[in-house]
Amino acid sequence: MDYWQKANKKLDILRQRDDYLILAIESSCDETAVAITRGKKILSNKISSQIDIHRRFGGVVPEIASRNHILAIDNVLKDALDDAGVMLSDIDAVAVTYGAGLLGALLVGVAYAKSLAYALELPLIAVNHIKGHIAANFITDETLSFPFICLLASGGHTAVLKADSFRNMEILGTTCDDAAGEAFDKVARVLGLPYPGGPQIEACALSGKPTIPMPRAFKGEKHLNFSYSGLKTAVINYVHNTKAKGGEINAADLARSFQDEAVGVLIEKAVLSAKRTGISTIALAGGVGANSALRQGLVEAGEKNDIKVLLPPKSLCTDNAAMIGVAAFLDIAEGALPAGLKLDADASLR
Ligand code: KG4
Ligand code: ZN
Image: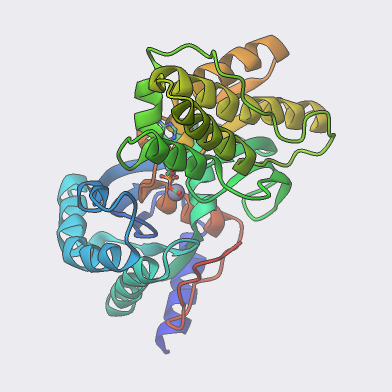
């Protein structure tokens, strides 16, 4: 039997159980992450962040990210195994993010995972990063069942989805230009705040008032798509115009005004998605899901509209490997096949 036949056979046996161990790897952007999961439970979840390395460049430098993943991954793997109290020989399957993300960064995780899977003769499960974010909700509530509405807002994606099963999700609306997290990061840069901008804007907005009018994209239109480029441009224009007139920028008020609009539209479209589909659960996913104003606003909207709102802890909203392990578990349960050793990274995976 060759590797692929063995992996297939092992996966068929695992599919009958729910107590097997997955070693999961995530390296799509600037976090090198390894987790050990069992079913929907986390045994360990280790992350080595490169934020301090990229901060001086004002954003992630892809080549530098790849190099640092290579430097970090051995130690993160060792930490994850130690923390879970298991050895490589205890692992039953390997999961890895293969897209979307930075190509070179993804390749490090994919090559590492393929080597591990081949050497240990284990099935390898290829995970879509976005499905990983959605899977974080099953860690938060193990009883979560399909269908549900997912509000996804990360650095690269923004969408409302109808999740009918793990393998079958319908995009109800998506962004036509920038992602929500991207808008946070760009507006932070305009305000002179360091990367990553989301948490910085949130902190800055705490002492501000929403005094500056912001445009709502697609106002009055029925579809559920998003657009963040007009909002970003409104902030940039406000800064330029105020400076040109010799005025002072109140960064806190500007951050608060921007944040209110940026999260307000997410909440509005998530609630609309629930109402239109008649589905009464909204699950939150992606890095912007760590934003307290979004979390609070979503809970309040849920209470008002009789919708259950699921909020993964902030550490599971931003990139991590536990969500990749649980995504693989859910995918295996729905019949996923093992990825072969030809698995490649796909930077623009849908
Ligand atoms: O999901 P994620 O960790 O990585 C991607 O898959 O993109 O999301 C990162 C994005 C960044 O744009 C970051 O600024 C944003 O999530 N973010 C936040 C907050 N924490 C992270 N945005 C708003 N408020 C936050 N507290
Ligand atoms: Zn992410």
